[in-house]
Image (cartoon, rainbow over all chains, first blue to last red; front, top):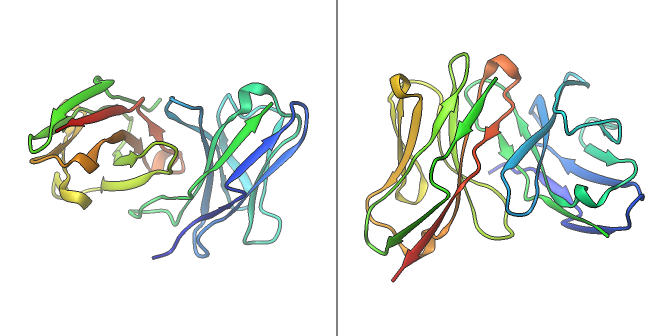
Length: 113
Length: 114
């Protein structure tokens, strides 16, 4: 069974610091996503990435956020200057397209102090 | 715009009883529909999905869901609940028209009493 992996599983950071969350999507997938889930709330879409560029982003995904696929395998989410309200579980996902399942990673729990 | 409504925030059910979780969606084209389950502090596990074809879909752990286009619904059912089914359940919608991004409902927490 193919799987999406994410590192780290947990990260604690100080407000104002930069964090990079890493994901390794499934190798033949074409679409990549980041979602977040604030504790006790629903899962929210942040950004989708296709053909080496952002295809859609939500209102949450402001200038403090960026995504990259630096080497054809990793897919990263960077938060430039973290805020307390960025504390959440961040999920990476990937999809081949078509009638296939979107696979989610196990998540990175980010805590901003 | 796409969205999902899960009308029930919390459902309590006795072990062995049947369970039905409601999901209504809004989507401008042919929807892809999903149910995920999440235990506390854990990731999302896919229970079942609907893309096309038979409107009654079977999933893992004995769950099934029925797609009703006329009602814009995709309700999840299980005939006999086990204590291990206590978790949070999320319905999600996506599709080709927006690069398959998923919109999730607010979730329904299921408590199973002995």
